[in-house]
Length: 583
Image (cartoon, rainbow, N blue to C red; front, side, top):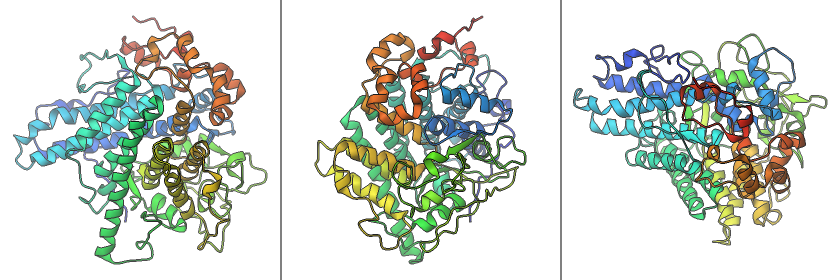
């Protein structure tokens, strides 16, 4: 049974009313705090809880998915400022007042991590029960969680401020300049490698904490993701090698854990699983265990939400209930043109793919233009088996006040496909890398087929993808089939685009360069439509005309942030709209 975090500071750590919204409550800096192990434990839990807030998860979806071909603004017209801002993002008219360009929710998490890192060491000498070993694992979690936040920020904004210091009151200096992408990514890597020195063991817990806390597997997964992004920006093959190494560390750890658990408890229908050497559930069970039960053997790190102490209202607003009233639709829908039908040209190419029926409600609809997201929304599975495959026609929701679905940050198939993506880029160094990448993709794809004994005509064939470009495309497509609506697609497309185009130097801040310089380097997004067909098609010709250079792929800096931090520079793509008069 799923267990949940008891957040000890559920109402105590409200943010300040200043624009940056990162300050803790006064009790955290009071004389009676930071005296006991429980004080530290409370603040560590508070950092995780802050990461689980609606503002963060909404941004995971908007920044990482909504801009892609997976989601659209709900065509039902209703009066909501979020809907208006989403429309502006989709049509390319976003400006610096768009609420989804607000990064405060992520910086609030970062500040809580910094507070723990600054204050926890003093507790070791005060409370004997708070040992040096516990301190080190707490520090490991906070370093990794902070790095994860910065990684989201650099992918959404490109140039972002970085600080190791904690903010306790509004009299402190908030003026911090932005850093170039590679500087931020290097900082993430530095923190993650330090965190890897004293991590929690994946075997340290047997309940939700085994994936609810950031342990060694989660740190390795974040490192693999950071190196994959870094390599895509720079073309550095060594970074692709590192991505493969960190993916392997996760995969081997999950295999070892699976074997250990099986030896301890004996084989079972669900536990006795071996897909080409990977511990994966059969397709008919995958949704139940990964998205309903949660904290599954495939999970690596997921934010814990119980519907009581903290609901996944970010997911709720986006996918099925935008304003906490009795509704069956959210701010976003999936385009029927991409998801209603299986076959060539669609997301799902096989009508025997369990994931197709578990992606959206009412697939196979002949007249729908948009579909409600099923994945993570439905509290029940489809009931589909190999013998009986049918779409779910009725939208089922858990009610209108809560949702207890965890938000999965990393799971095993995500890491497997990261490895495949990196191997494709390393094909010149080893002729077998394309075959190795294909084998991974085929394993992920084959486990989801509602066919107990698939034949060659049912599965992917290497002969159809035996070039670098074809394999790169296959990995991208399989990631969408496997990870749709999980906040991955736009970032996947960005990596693909960076590899397709020569962009501005990632060592430089785009905010310090004239837009025309970046335009000449990038070749313009009109050129991107020719070179990077996928992203070009997603943006559409009208949006391409308004998006002239690389910075348009990122969000602007929020106006309120620039009023607080005078050292911030606006993304040059939005400079023409910038009219802030700093007082």
